[in-house]
Length: 197
Image (cartoon, rainbow, N blue to C red; front, side, top):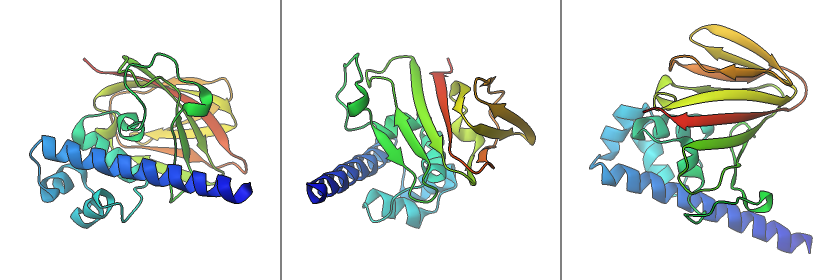
C-alpha cells in the first residue's frame, strides 16, 4: 500500500512539473518571446529556463517568482494549472501543493482556480530557510501576510518586519524582499493577494 501511495505521489509531482513547464513555455510563446528575451526580463538564465520548459529541472521558488514577475502573472497561476476552471469550491484534499526542491518551502493554493480577484495561499517555511523574491514578482498585485504559527522575518527594501502568530502585514510598494524563518521550527502563514488595477 505504501509503495502504491509513493508511486501516486511521484506521479502527481511529475504531472504538476509538466503542467508548470508547459505553462511557462505557453506564456513565453504567447508573448512572442525567445528564451533569451525571457531570460533578460526575468534574470533567470536561458539555460535554466530551457531545462525547466523541458522538465529537466525543477524550478525553485525564487526562479518561479522571477518568471511570474516577468510575465506579470501571480505565481499561483503557474502552480495551479492542473485545476479545472470555473470551480468555486476548493476542497483541501484537492488544493494544489508545490514544494520548492531547493528549500523545502511548501505553498498550498487555497483559493478555487476560477480567476477570482482574491487569492489565498498557505505557506510553510522550514526552520532556517530564506526565500528571496525580486520586486517584479510583486509589481502586479497587493499582498498581505498573516502569520498562523511561528515567526516570520519579512525584509523589504532593507527594512525588516518581525511577525509572530496573529500578526498581519500589508506589503508596501514593490521592492526586492526576503522571507526568513530564523527559528528552529517551521513557520506557517497565509498570503492574501489581489491584482493591482
